[in-house]
Image 1 (cartoon, rainbow, N blue to C red):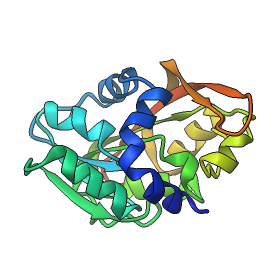
Image 2: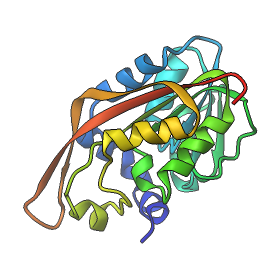
Image 3: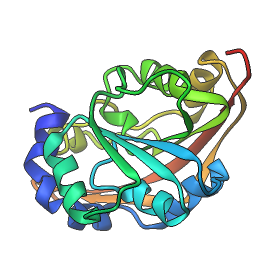
Image 4: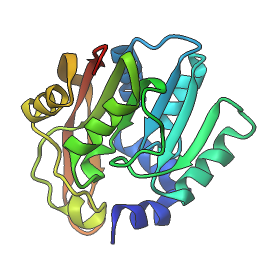
Length: 211
């Protein structure tokens, strides 16, 4: 099963599942790292049912929500109803359906470990940023909980923070910072007596003019 098929299957239950995995502190930390400003435009990559988007619209931003699962985007639409500051687009993190230099911020929360090539996804996020815009990624630290490949169809068992920093720099980003979000992700296996407790990092970087 692919990650898309997994999220198609769990779309209706995702909000409840997500609440068991990590807290709203992740969203607070991500928005703080970006320094979001009212009236700007942000892309929420791997948006799911709108965990990051919720905070962005509350701060007065317009949002382009991108996810490969149309089913989970439909759940997000039901959740946010008639809010007209969200633009929903089906797409892949490595080939974003967003033109060059059209957003002020690009967020990806717990998305990177599902993509085939994380460096390519980061380059795509840099491509859609306006000069001076910021990328913020929140995701799992490197770990060895193999059951997450089987039960959640993760491609990557988290990431080494030095690799994340190197990928940001390779994408041409400056002012790169990678640190702890201050909370953990906890996932209980459905097939065995195993609890994954994994640190969460927040990585940010700015697009230089002329990139």
